[in-house]
Figure 1 (cartoon, rainbow, N blue to C red):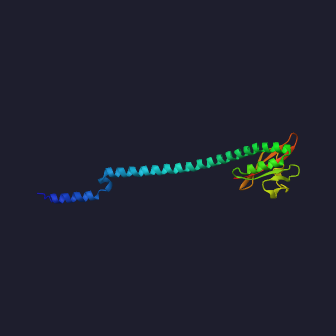
Figure 2: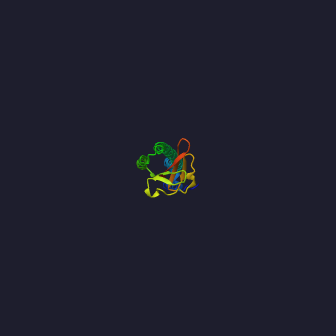
Figure 3: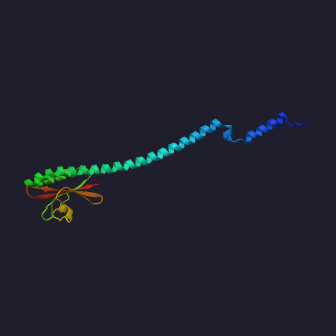
Length: 179
């Protein structure tokens, strides 16, 4: 006769020990599936947000470069058109009207200084800064300009436009603009 030491009390004790030995994930499969899904979703979201941030920074830099380029082109065109008004007054010999144009143009955003240079000797004929009058421009790139030129000067840049008469250069318009 075999002796069976099995009692209902002992069987429930063994089952509780086996249940205690099972992992949390095995005891709660639905909860473990939800936790794993949340971890995967959080990982995917984190990865996508990092990629999105990198793309946004890249595009922001590209947009800033395009904006600066367009701003510079706008400024060149603006100075070119302004030089037409200055040309008509210089050809008439009306420097008082040119000075009035300079003062009004100086009120435009980011314009620091407007100068009219004599192309023959490089002296400043008229400037919005009166201390500059009758001084020499030492920058050869400005004096020798034959078409519109942009000269970078650090925190500002010069837009230089020659003013042409019928057969010769009658002046050089130099506009200093903040970046």
